[in-house]
Image (cartoon, rainbow, N blue to C red; front, side, top):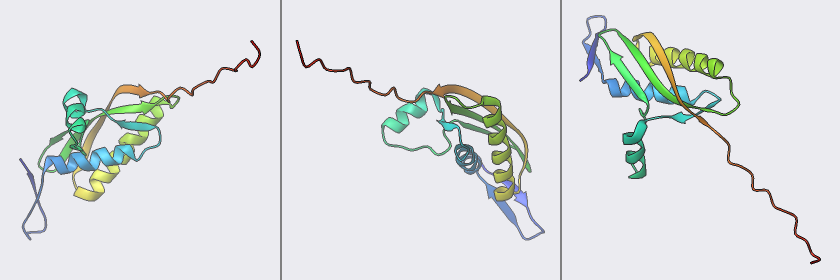
Amino acid sequence: MSEKLERDGLGEVKINPEVVGIIAGLAATEIPGVAGMSGGIAGGIAEMLGHRNLSKGVKIDLGEHQCVVDLSVIIKYGESIPEVARQIQENVKRTIEVMTGLDVMEVNINVHAVDFPPKESVEEPVDKVK
């Protein structure tokens, strides 16, 4: 389903909710501290099969001239979750509004996981004399 935006009597512009979802997902992953989006089990299976879903972890409730965005994100370990979430909200809102002309009423952030860096392998000293 796509939504219509009327502009200056020139005709209609239709925006598919999936397009808004892709914009939101890309805008969220631009923020330092975001490890990725969380699409749940179905999204994970699709990625394993080689299908990259650019709107993974994004739900868009699209009205005629406005939208509400729900994002499921994975935050990098050591980052301030409230600060990263605020930056995501600001960037997603600004990007959608500039690119689509829609009013973004809410950007809700759901932190689904924390991404821990891989453990460094620690080599044990080798005793040369036994």
